[in-house]
Length: 219
Image (tube, rainbow, N blue to C red; front, side):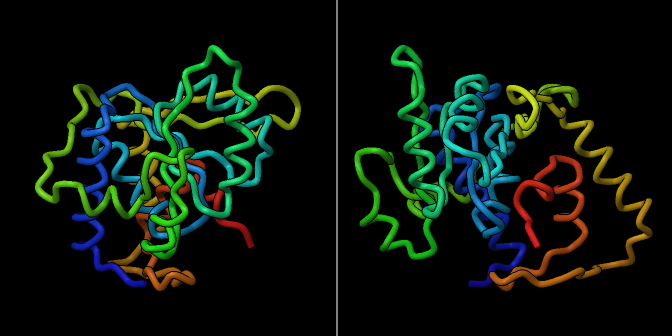
């Protein structure tokens, strides 16, 4: 599976469009539980494009901890990789009865398999959101550079998980700062991952600024 940057841009707009059609608005939290796959990478852009706040959840966490994060963040929608399906359903079952449950979207490598695997627990599949979205969607600009963009949590190894919010200005500053600090040359490619997507400096900056790298890229 290979996507050009032009295709990636279009797919991100389509997902952002679908998120908006699902009622996701600026200030809402959208969570993601997935490893280093194309959908995970696209969501780093698509969620902010919809005006929502991105919450990357470490896929190694147990159901109890994930349920705490979903409840505290008041997540409206969760993208779930098929490998994390069981732990997410367990986490949902641990939410208090009076808690409004987020909608679940299933991510799978095979679009047809994803559709056949969608049950009453999931509202749709990731690829169906891509297909139904508008590639001409005008992404939602932040009203201020201080508007929240990313919500991250610690893994809760010593106590309950603690959250931190990054704004658009902060993410941009860290990304550009990393580019300058590393002396990155023009069009570098650090490595190619198993999905055959060239990962350039942008991905590394994304990871260091939003903690995605530590949570989702394992040796």
